[in-house]
Length: 399
Length: 98
Image (cartoon, rainbow over all chains, first blue to last red; front, top):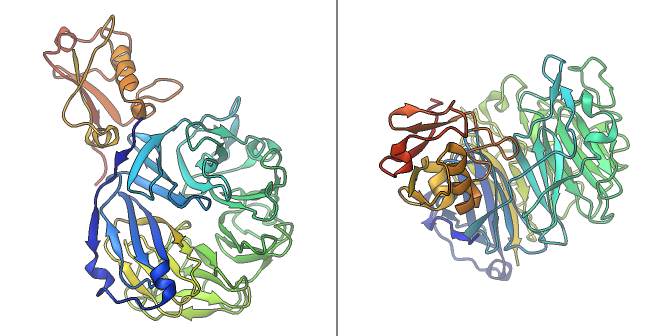
């Protein structure tokens, strides 16, 4: 089917501040494209390498939920988007021109064989049922290969640019699947990390089953949850059942993983074989996002949220916390962020970094703001303020 | 010529304005109309009916000639006014939410 135009681009958003003259050579040769998924459409924010003035698109797919958009590392013009609706189900969109036009590709996510059952909230067996795609992870090397993490939890792969999808059923079939149970947000596979050093190694995470790893390209999987301690499950150190909210890695050091669990910030130095807590002096270790600085593998970011019943920042102060030591020692980053009367949440897929020399850090809130820091978190600006609730933020660094 | 009216979200998704007009072979039923619609607009597959079971999605309704036909069998003939094109077949999104 033919590609069709997206909606037009708006002019520079006044909320982004005055347009600045960009003087650095890096700024003139590079650009940043921020892909924002919201409850009511997708937005594309673009800037040059100075990251001072931003162009905000009009909504793409207005009225639909955009759980996630992500660009191909191998071809930045190729972007995949997960478009869904409680009324009309799941769609997958693909762009070949950086988000200017889109093409609906295949939306058939059929579980392999007899799907079987997982546990329902009350502990009874419940049939596996596809609901939506939470996360799309394009291959590091092939624009036509993309992974999809779905609810009810499973991993799918397309090798033809989204024209067809096949489940990597070894994940659900490895043995513990019938014991998985949904978290409050549903039983979603929300994190997919592709190992840039070991091409057949993939890490994924499921709420509320835990983290898993394959070393053979998705054929076989094993839980990697040793060291996690979750008091909300009958056996706090069980092999599965942990509500992992997000995993992050630095591409130069893929054996080191960071995790924001329901409660607890965790670290693994052995590709998930074991974990230890690095929450340190955080004001609360509940939260959703975690990410790693593009050039400093020991610099990590989280946004503490008060609790699992109060999904907003402590004391009404929106603070990113940064550790330069890979955890345990954290500093609050507040410049440019609201420090009073702020009660937004930051969802698990809503933080990303760019790879410019001075690393940019970005996150979106359920209040519709997207904040950006062009200096590794020292200072922040809202590059757009009044979007629908933000579900996801991804960044493409264009060189 | 069968006339079909889509809800706004699906008009946008299929890039259509106004009514969709379809040539439908044989008996005019929900199934034959929806099959023809999906043949003409493949991006609507899965958006109105489940891919595998072909059951109507829960928050959609089928109206025609001031009647709710949502619970009619998919192979039951649609009213003559639909078959002749005098009236449109309406696919309606349920009103829900605040």
